[in-house]
Amino acid sequence: MDKDFKRWHTKKSGIHNDQHVRVFFNEREIWWCALGANVGYEQDGKGDDFMRPIIVLKQFNKEVFWALPLTTQVKVGKYYFPIDLRDGKDRRVILSQLRLVDAKRLKEKLSVLPKKQFQELRKAITALLQ
Picture 1 (tube, rainbow, N blue to C red):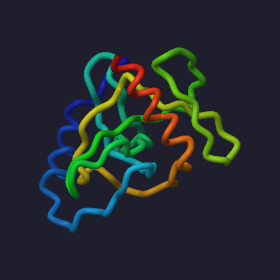
Picture 2 (cartoon, helix red, strand yellow):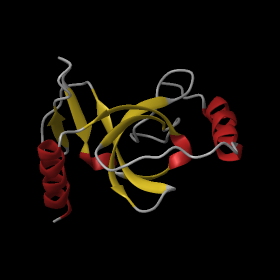
Picture 3 (cartoon, one colour):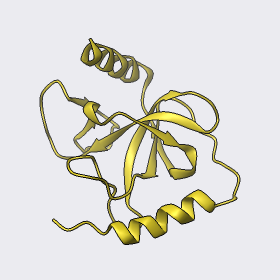
């Protein structure tokens, strides 16, 4: 599969240079995020803007956070965590793709993960790291 790194670089430069006010975000929120075209098996964004839904796992300040990408592909195993957004779609959090993200990449808030599911997600991440 060919990846359009040149087009992503142009988009990424625009995101970096954007002087608009940063969005406000919190842990547990699910956002469309410009993850880009990435190397090898790293999770890519899709579409013209290289977007993918992510969940904000840990907010460090108003500018950066740990993000976990979501997928609608039904996968099982210790690297995938099922979540239910009560919209009838099967989704998995890809635990192995945890990454630091700048808030400039956030585009649109989609939902908020219920507290109980978020606590279970954090337990799954902790177990994975041990």
